[in-house]
Image 1 (cartoon, rainbow, N blue to C red):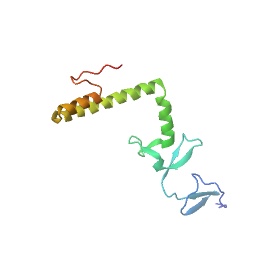
Image 2: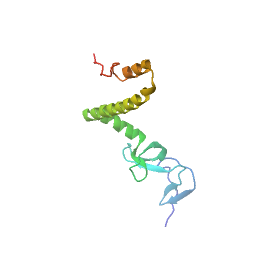
Image 3: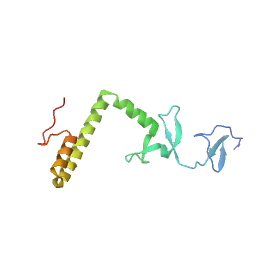
Image 4: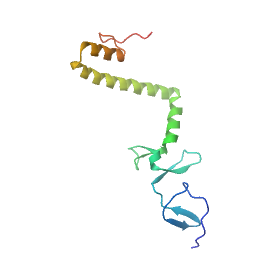
Length: 132
């Protein structure tokens, strides 16, 4: 096996640690574990701190880095389907909040209950307010 001098190119950028020269390419032990992001332009290795947690994957991290995932989500939410799903999720969240709110209102004063109802778009009798 021939060991050559390293080039200036190191996969993933400059790294510190014990150096190994394999086939003329410098391979360093990274300080932080890295993961490949195929969506980046150009695709590259990034530290795992730049990936969202994703319980369903084998390594517990999202397949793409935070920058790429955020850009993807913004593009998706700009579509009609994405906007519809976002609105449905928002409504579901408000319903969950209302349920918790109504449980907490049992011990609230009348003024506190009316303020809370108005906050969620209801009149004091509990009917939805008409949008103008």
